[in-house]
Image (cartoon, rainbow, N blue to C red; front, side, top):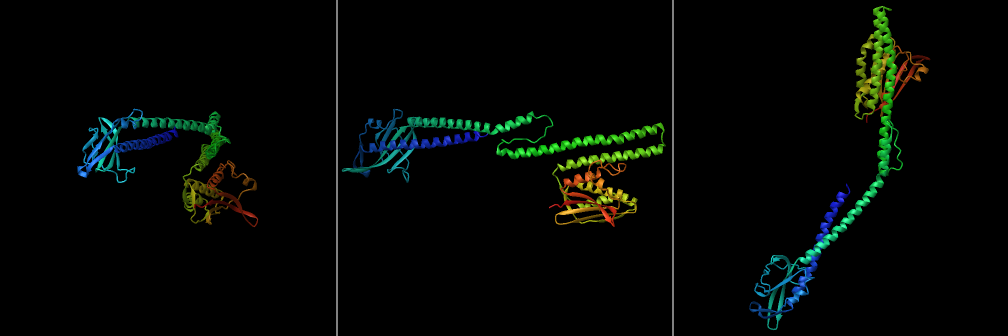
Length: 454
């Protein structure tokens, strides 16, 4: 329907144009007949006297016009007058011509054509100004020949009908070809649609459509990319639910045992409340970090990134945890340069907070903690150097895996996993390296390299 409507409009316009052109051609052909009739009458003229005193004479039997009447469908009338309108012969009811000869007449004669009404019938009139000369005189005759329009209308209707049915056949052929072409072109699409509808719920495997039209391949590829992202999100949600159920079960079970023990009076109330408080803190930290890990995946799918200065975020986070630094009497040093990063503000804040919190936690009281941001032409590097014991080779191999904390009593093992997810989402890298001095570990350097905003 979409293609037939403009084609149909074009056919209508084309039909009207062809009809007008054909009608103009018919008029031109029959105007020649009128002119021939007028010239035939002019051959019967005679004159006596000159100019104002001239007298025209003519003998024109009406049968002389029958040769120009076609198939008895049209009737012809004539009038012969002097130049001043005096009737000489013919039908007096035919109005005298009052027009003007065109500057460039269509024929080599002083002729004019116009439409008029005679005896309540529309007619086409040819006017011929014919000079008449004889040995006895000279004058100018005005010969009018009128023809009714039955034959012209009949021929015009025939041309219109012939044009319409040919255009109708053309439109039908176009419609048939369009239907066949569309059916053949959309067959792979319909087959692909049927395959997708027949898929079981949750099946997000890539679409295989090798026979799809070339124009649809970008759509198929884009759909496969979307389905891949959906599959990744679905797997991430399943893993999150599984990990949450597994990890929260343990602190809740411990909490229940501690509460039951306190109710039975197996331990001092103060001691029981301290242990319950520690268990609740660990469960709260675990829940917050699991939600943070899920939020990283959510933000990864969003495109509304902003240019954020990493230095400002790091300084703000350092100010937030300054009470923890002061509590351990840590010698803290921070040195930054402006580093615009294309990111979500929450991502950079969570990344900095986890790294600084881990560094503060592992730095002994009275130790040193340094934060530095440097940059080159394309990347910025955030390095947090603590004064802790570093990490063992066995632990470094699995440190970025969720729930792989070095000390399960003081962490959930999600902090570095969150840092790695954020870093990868921003197109950067993260590394942890022991800082050595004279063969001894003097601390740990956590370095994050992120691309600068263009």
